[in-house]
Image (cartoon, rainbow, N blue to C red; front, side, top):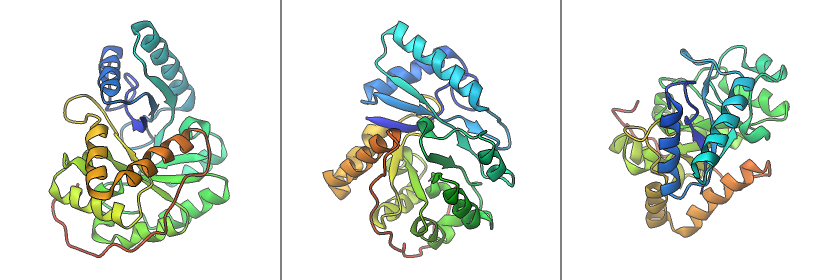
Length: 254
């Protein structure tokens, strides 16, 4: 199993604080069946800034510790950049780190809304050769209230990644319900953990795939798992024709 979104690198953001915590997370990941993981620390959100060189250094250090400890997990380098006014300039300068140095780039939106310039920004990013992946749209209040926003972005070439814990109901029943609506509408291309620790923000990947298989069949599980493999190799991922989500009022999303 491949997990393309995690906060396992020690001391960089609100994920693992120490190498010991990173190793503890790694052991739990392996128990779930995860063998490859992309480390994606936050970058240029309100609290954290993690340049490429620091991430590469931490990835090397963690992989060495994993080998020394005999933990069968390989860490790849990535980043979770928050959308901001200068992000295109940062990309032009080569300051943003794509996922495993492929064309795929995570984009984190504010939790409460979708900035007005998002559509134009994602269009410009694609013209520059990147493939943007919107992370955890199921927890974005603007998309919950107006799911057609995600539909339009996906229709115009963006991809989206759902958090495993959302499918499992760890963020509440409303987030779970909206997550399933997004899957059913072909608006999700990846499932990932977004794990921060082994307690309240753990992996839950195995459980999420069990739910997906039960509700949508093994073909949907294969779709998401194969896409993760294609992503780390820099190949084109599978996409289904996006559909509109029927608008339903959901409360308590965060």
